[in-house]
Length: 316
Image (cartoon, rainbow, N blue to C red; front, side):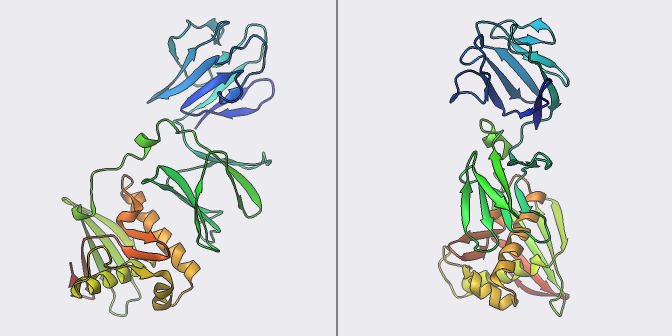
């Protein structure tokens, strides 16, 4: 995340990938309310791997004391100083030049740091989450889910959510490059083979995923038992010759009963499994592992094998 800091006030501005400065309140990202500032005065934009500034004004923009040529792009560097007016001496300094990232910003609490959004977050912490925030690649949008009611809701630009009594606001910095940042690979479930290994007492479950000539080790995790149980449901439906579109779907309530845990814990386990998957295959959708719809879930894989002890229990 790039930061532009006002030298006078110390206030920092998080930069979007196409960040406009000017006097036109509803059309700019940062309002500069000075008489000599034009409606769209300047733009700072991210063109990987660099940030650039362009002067769009009538009255000029200064970079490190040098007046910029109008409409031409000038590459920015860390600690560069920018002035948008010759009359008003307010100077801004580029204090970070990292690539743009969507953020959750704390509301009315300067002591908290921004949360840099990747693709999956358990908040306020991984061990005891109350909110799960994740990116939906199908609809190109952020979503959040309360662990209390399991309701999935879209999270829009500027919207606030409460986490442990603190309000957080979504700041979308990647608006014009979002499709590039979540560019999904053409890999499909047909390209993957899921290999489950259970201990004889089914107390431990290991998962490995084969893709082309590579083997990704997901190690032993408690949430793998949930995933292998979903794979068993799907295999039973296949053997019963159910139609492909209904194979494997199971109510979360039934899954909770079969696992002996409550629905809240089931949903957290589902998210843990999906999070580990997309962190290992970060260009794929979480639905590739576990699909969800209206209180139901199913295993998303097409090719899988289940070993119990040294014996192959089933394969598809």
